[in-house]
Structure formats: structure tokens, C-alpha cells
Amino acid sequence: MKTMNRVFKYAFWKLKGIKVYALVGKSGTGKSFRSKLIAQKFRIDLIIDDGLLIGGNRIIAGKSAKREDNMLSAVKTAVFDDSEHQREVKQALSKQKYHRILIIGTSEKMVYKIAARLNLPQPEKLMRIEDIATKEQIDTAMRIRYSEGKHVIPVPSIEITRNYPQIVYDTMRVFFKHKRQVPFQRRNVSFEKTIVRPEFSKYGKTTVSEAALTQMVAHCLDEFDSQIKVKRVQVQIKAEGYALTVKLRVPMQHQIATTLGELQEYIADSLEKYGGIFVSSVNIEIEEWG
Image 1 (cartoon, rainbow, N blue to C red):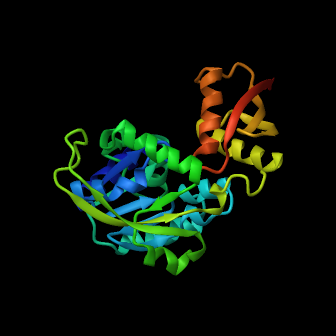
Image 2: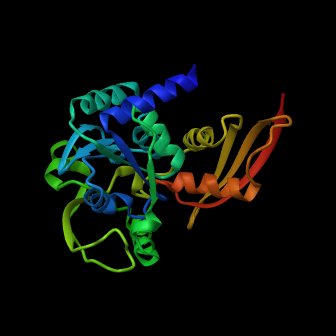
Image 3: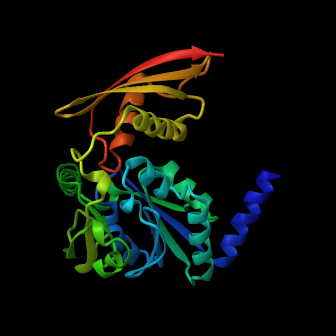
């Protein structure tokens, strides 16, 4: 029955001529910064980015993850975890005339989840930030993100100040010059973008409690493997960031589909996604149960 439903939905979207694109990359690598370039290249009508539905230079619906005051809330907003948020954007989508839409996310799983929650077809074309930006450009974007806590929303500042004036840092017009090593560009183009500094990106302003970190890690791991449960996260605050000891409960004989080192890296990377939690180390303790 589920297979039939998937086939029916696929045929329905094909008849409507709707095609979904996805752009994937780690947080801070410049996805939002370059999203308009992709939209122009593929004649994409709408963009889904960090909880917002964007059309041209206008925010059509949704709420920005950048306005949240902690990383956990930002992640939930970005993946449309709230049913009212979903409803608002789905209703707005139903009123739009569009054929192509771009979903931006930090992982394949994230963009597929967003598509499902907004009743959109699964992405037909998935691109990675490395496909459209050079290593030097990505490194520069990440350095700015983690040293200065700056984020980009791909609409003019007038759209942001209308709803979120407290997070606006600056505005800029970006000129992309055609370079042979970036295959998506065929000519020079420019777009206006807004630079923001969300509360959750201001490291050092406040510390994060062990209870909050436990919730954050639990949310991240639920995306990774729902069989793994977080018992507790202990934290030490060091000059270079948070040193975590993560105590996990795993069902007996359940095979975690990764190495311990990869799991440590996954937790650290997930907490740093929005520039809110800078992790210096992750120590994992596993307790079997059941």
C-alpha cells in the first residue's frame, strides 16, 4: 500500500511539473550565500532555507531559524518540526505558481525530511556545496561563520528588518564573477543579501547547561539512529570550547552503523551546525540495556 501511495504521489507531482532540487553542505560553508546563483542557473522559482519559504527577493512564509535563541530551537525550526509552521508553509506553497523549488540543508536526510514534511516530492537533483564553490571559498565562509558568528539570509535586508530587526548585522550586494573552476557560473551576476548575527551564534555570551546539551545531543542522535538513547551529557568548559562526555544507552545486540570515531565526529559536527556550540572533544560511554 505504501509503495502504491509513493507511486501515486510521484505521478501526481510529475503531472504538475514540479521538480525539487536540493543543496547540501555543512553549516557555514556558504549554501545560503550561493543559493540565488543556483536558482538563476536552473530557473528555480522558490527556495526553502532555514525555515523560510523564499520567492525572488521576498519572504513568502515561514519563520527563520536565525531568530531562535538556542541551537536546539534553531534546528527544530529549520526542519519544520512544529505542525503550525508546517501548515503555514504548505498553505503558502499551495497558492504559489511554481515548477522548481530548492531545499537547502546540512545533510541528505535533512532535505528529504523537509520535503516529506511539506508534502513535496523527494529531490530529483541533489547538489553539494563543493560542486559550486571552490575549497578556498568554502574555507573562507567557514572561518567567518565560526570566528564571527555571521550568517546569510538570501533576501534584501528590508525583508528581514520587517520581522527580525534585532538580528540584522549588515547588508551587501554580492557580485559573482565567472570563473572556470566554478561550473555553475556562465556570466557575472549580483544579488543583495542580508548578514545576520543570531543570538545562538554569539559564543561566550552565555554558557549552555548540561540539561540543554543533553536535549541537543538527543535530538541530533534521534536523526542519526533512533535506537540510541542519550542518558546524560556532562560538560567541561574550556578555552577552545566544550569538552563533552556523552553517556548513551543502546539496546543489546543493536549494531551502530558507524565507528565510535565517526559517531564522536557526528555529535561534534551536529552541535556546531549553527555556530552555537563549539566542541573541543567528545568522549562516549555506552551502556547496553534490554
